[in-house]
Length: 166
Image 1: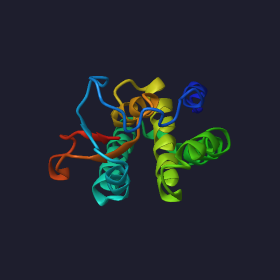
Image 2 (image 1 turned 90 degrees about the vertical axis):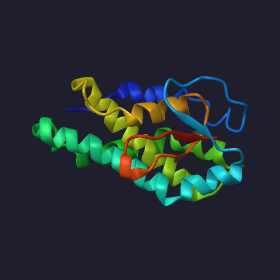
Image 3 (image 1 turned 180 degrees about the vertical axis):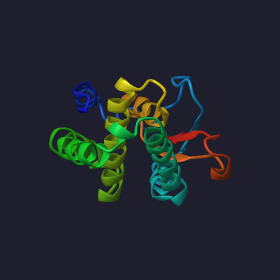
Image 4 (image 1 turned 180 degrees about the horizontal axis):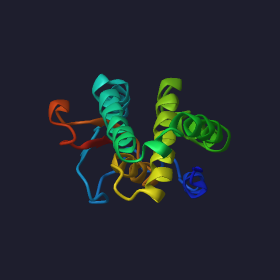
């Protein structure tokens, strides 16, 4: 199994965080709550709730793959390493520049983790249309020039909830 090169090209085209903090319209077809300030967005990114939500989403994805496509799921760690290196070299310089006036290195590392998970989900989704699409939704937030910064649902009723976006 190979990584989906198209997803990296799409990442390169993003105008990173250009609309963060702007007024919202109905731009997403899934639940979104608004972070009213940059400081609340940063607190949200640093929150355990957001860390746990993204971990739950990865667990949904890897659990699906392990149960239904074990032969290709075995490539996950190798693909994750290659993908992370590519994102660090090709995409993170632009992301870091866009974040320079917003925040610190922790947020950049969080975005890197998101982008790696997005790339892996996109690669597996090309082969298996039934993979969970949390990271596809997350990618649409980044593509819209926004900063995803939290999850407003109760994790005991996962995946019911909304993304928090700045």
